[in-house]
Amino acid sequence: MICLRTTDDWTTATITLDDGGGPQVFTPTSAVKDARAAAVEFAAFLTATYAVTPTIEYLRLATTGATIRIIAGAPFAIAYNAAGLALFGGTDTTDDAFDWAAPSGAVAGVFSQFSDESRIHLSQPAKTTPGVRPAASVGAICAQPPGTSLHRVRAMSSAGDIDVAQLRNALEVAANPRTAVVYDANSGNWFSVAVGDVAVSQGTALRRRVDWQIVGGS
Amino acid sequence: MSARIECYVYASAEASMAEAYTLSVTEPGPTVVDVTLTQPLRFTDALAEWQTQLNASALAGTYTIAWAAVSQSVVISATGVASFAVEFGGNTHKLCGFSSSTGHTGLPSYRGDQQALGRFDDLRWSVAGVVPHDDVTLHEYRHGRARAIAWSQVDAIEGSLYCTRERMDFLLVSYCAAGIVRVYPDEGVATAYSAAQTDGYIDGMVLAIDDPEHRPARGLSRVRLAIGLGR
View (cartoon, rainbow over the protein chains, first blue to last red):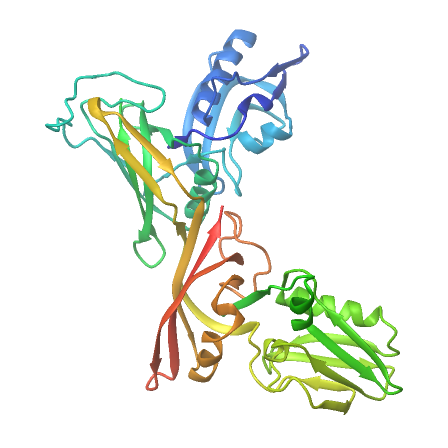
């Protein structure tokens, strides 16, 4: 999953929860600039407010595309305000898990390919030690622009028509400078990257190939 | 599945531009009414606008201005009046599929006699879908830092368009060859392109219509068509 930093004001979104003891409202802080950060803050809110230990899953569902699922482990009545609906794409009204997705837009700034036939392929093929750019900042991260580790991440994926349309939605709200966090399902790590060209080319008759020009990777 | 392309008409309230998109209708009497477009409209909407203005005017008849797919041209007809005459301003007659701007008199209905330059139905479009077309500059700095700036917010849809040689000659000089157009990859889908409707229509700017290729042996001509659409 790739979560782009977006131009949205995430602080305008609210999620009102009620476990029977009265409503509690979650509002992302101003530090939240992408959907992944919103999910992490929301999980922390659930823990602090309801003493549950939620888990976060990053999925691609066949019907809704990119999906962030927060499994709370306890049932809630759920209400999103208008901004919350637009940014989270949440449609649940009562559940013990929260799916942030929508067929037409997905979560703001998110692109995901996690189905069996459509997977983002991440690779860190070699250490990045170019002669003119000493890799002296091992592990260092600057918010804007991002730093890199010794390894460079590459991302590519195959995509169907819906995925390409959701990619368009994600890029539409991407903020400048264009950065994102990329999830590596194997290691469970997130990489902070600068996002350059996103090239979509014809793969097979019904599939496209998506190549992300990304630099970073800490 | 067939494709359709339809132009947007660049009318404005400025006098000479408005005149270029004027229909002049004369009923026996005579009663003369000029109706015009004063703002940019999609071709189909332009027809509706002319029709609305005619029916709100001092004319006695009830007018219908409709697209006729079978002739690929516009039909202007009236009821409640024995006959009327219509004259087209500027190049509007070709926009609507009439070879002449004048000479349409004495009948209650007129149908364009050639391919309209404002809309082309029943095309074949081999297309790979909407793809990102933004211009991104990625700078890499010392210590492995990087910054990417996206300078545009545009996608593109590009493919090969096929139709008969005769219609291709019209298409290449048509109102659909430049400016803003609406493209239907599937004429049967009347909703806009989105993740929920990936074969929906697209409103965009013609980036290129070039490399025409006439293939007599195959019976169809081909042209490359690229449409840019803002995000």
